[in-house]
Length: 322
Image (cartoon, rainbow, N blue to C red; front, top):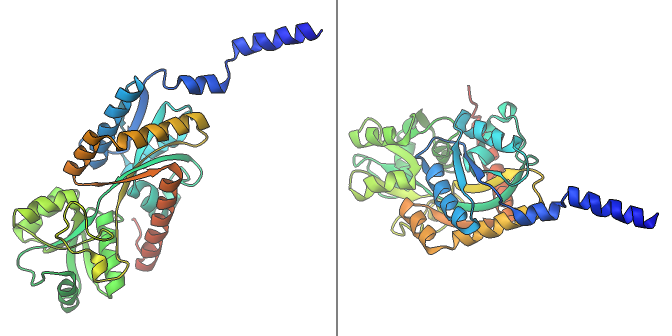
């Protein structure tokens, strides 16, 4: 009888390989990387940089699948609903994980605290307060004074609840200002209107704004990084003038909840290794972002803190999406 039981156990083991074996073999086929935005944007470019190097290291393709829609909700929902086998992951932004769950929480079909496995905080970028040459301000103190003297001054944003919009609300809340956000479909449109003088003030992403600043077409007032921004140390941080006024929209990797522990560890280890690759570091610097290099739990905690900070601003400003 004992011999029969032993034979059955061995037979079942042969027919049903253990989870550990499947994890050890991962990846044995291409991995899908969902990018919740269209090709060519910030998130897409960074995802492709990392995906290429992951593929080289692991011997399987990491295939980018762009799933834009609903401000990133469509792609993140697909990631949340994917099989938790390590063959579908996604690249997320602060907008999708830290802002939308507060701003449009009733319209999101997933729970950011329960439906994802957080893998790696990849990078972040600062926003810059920029003005046209006609604005009589060279630093944040002077800009605040000018805005107080000119209430309801329009400032350019990329839409309600975007990091550019919330950048303005953060300053307004901290300095007691009243400004009027103006929504544009994309930053390149607002930059052109700034250059043309149709609007005079914006708080926009560093990679978008810095080129025009260095060309002398716009003036940088302050940058939202905590301390000097490594890629533009000449620009004064907002926190030097208004203590605690910081904003660093982030980008990172996640997967569906309940992924196998072995695969999670391997993914985190590989993402960390890719982040240390000199070619990757150089590419990210050229792109205008700074690396955060946060392994899973640290990345998740940073997003919780960011979400709480945005929640306070959104509630106080009474921001709602129509």
